[in-house]
Length: 214
Image 1: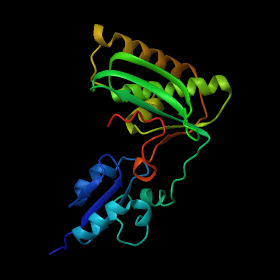
Image 2 (image 1 turned 90 degrees about the vertical axis):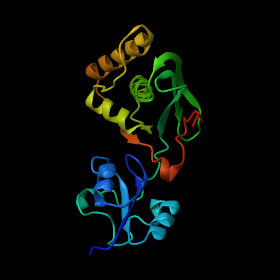
Image 3 (image 1 turned 30 degrees about the vertical axis):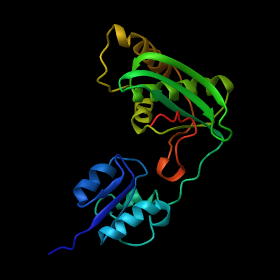
């Protein structure tokens, strides 16, 4: 009988401890730079999850890599914050609900731009708008600074130049949809060479633009 393994996911769709590879795979398979590893005891896994991935990831051959080992190995190096960057975040009151967003200097925390509140939107749409706002701002500045967001979904939408949301178009969402349509038009009409990166909350703490509304 195969020995029970415990799979720790530090960085993935839903970080946590899983008791099967199939459960773990759902969290990491399509998640860029996922950090995960298998352990042979529940206690060891719990301690490793508490310690954080930098103390355990890539340290031994027990890493949970039954599939996608080559993809995981490319993320072995410890990520370092690029402080020459803008970090964005969204403040929400309900999801959907009123939203606002801002971009700050990652090094100093200085607010560079802010928008809202917008009557009715979602967290991911707000993140999407904040990222595109950053790109438009940096393009005007002639800057290739990095942009950080803690929303993997919004980063994907920006790269694909389309949004996939269930938020209906109606009178209450007219404002946010007007902004989203404008942002999509900007993406179609403009190119950029700025890096768009996922903020590693598990490793670095809350993103610098965080509104503190957890």
